[in-house]
Length: 206
Length: 192
Image (cartoon, rainbow over all chains, first blue to last red; front, side, top):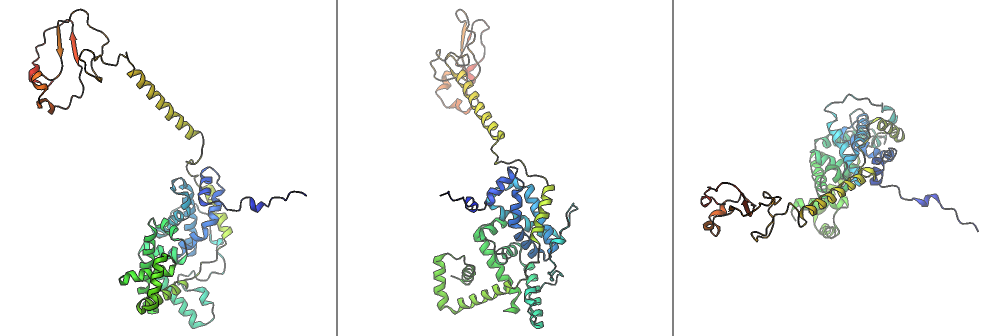
């Protein structure tokens, strides 16, 4: 009886950790950074989009954030905390985005956007709710989305980031703490205070 | 627990981040406290409101990933790894070890008995080394015409008067003068 061939999926079932990938990149394996891009690009776009409210800007910020992360990867103190560190870069770039665009050689990103998005006119609104077909509900949801987006922008920076990252994007508290450079307890507090303020700002819905 | 603490606990409770003991206590309170129940209902409603936030735009993630990767290809590479175990770290280690070895060797040579850097302390019977000044490389020949003791004058040596001068931390025990003039220095008026 021939020995059973080893299943290739059993050889290395665990994907490499962020820390391992960071170490590989720093050791010269540039392609390992592509795996980090694949892991975090959605989260980066989401956070940036929630802060900027515009998908084109969000894609641009995301690309810039990965570039900045790559070129300063050697400054990362805790390689395992790459995700939180990257989100800190994303949030800083997003918050600074409106201060001015840099002149830089950049690859166009608009064709990375799908054709089905219909809420990029700055008016806000919950598209998936608006698809319900009920005109009254559609208007209500659009108005609610607009108010919610406006209310989010009125929150203090830390509270807004905590709400966006933890509540909306469901990042772990540890990762949010890394991104905000604060303790997990402080993240809980920022989320709590942010919710309180949002409740005040949207009191007509209560 | 004041109102804000209660609200904070309920916020963590809904997020699933409240520690088990506090969670059990809060659930007990929620069962009987209408105010706590009202706060919980309000926070649930706010969470539902937040859940209505518009979804992300449709993005072709594979294409975006390729674009970012191409941009990174053109970017400046990160600095040399501190994780790489290569010649750099080994060279630093060897250099450090060599420095330690040289320092130890020099110290042993300087302190070995008979070294010209060791002070002759037999004349005074004082134990220890003088760090500077008289090196006994050339002993005077014949009977000394005079002998100068450098140190506190006899009337000061036992008193506390000279102690204010703490600048001189070492001194030669003795200076022998084979030929020379009579020392006219008034040592009695100096601390040393």
